[in-house]
Image 1 (tube, rainbow, N blue to C red):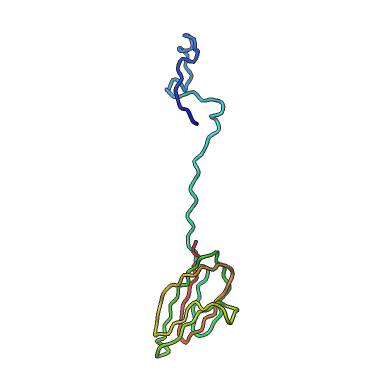
Image 2: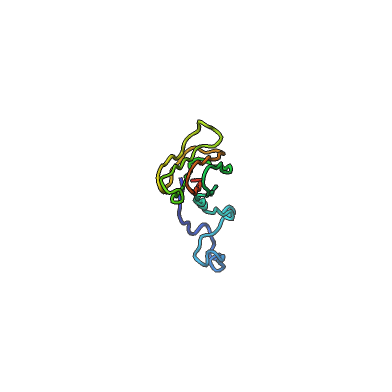
Length: 141
């Protein structure tokens, strides 16, 4: 329980009123010995921001560099098959595992999008495409 109040008089003698303390002269309450300890307000933590942990581009088949994501992550991609002259395949799967997760499997002349993934860790990607492509991995806080 917190009690806030003002105490006046406090047993002062008439002579004490002629020599007020600086804090009481300004109308401020007197400070006790414990009030010298200041309590600062907690500063809010900075909001985590998304961080690009991998950006690669190429054409054909490629294994990416390893990257680390904490949990949720976005895979942003684009591909363009205009040099191929027709629709092409664009496949991105978990690296190092022939039976690993297939994150993307598209057939088209071009495309761009983002897919949201939820499995953090250290990993790499294997890309297989007849098209030119760009990918970015964003670690989402």
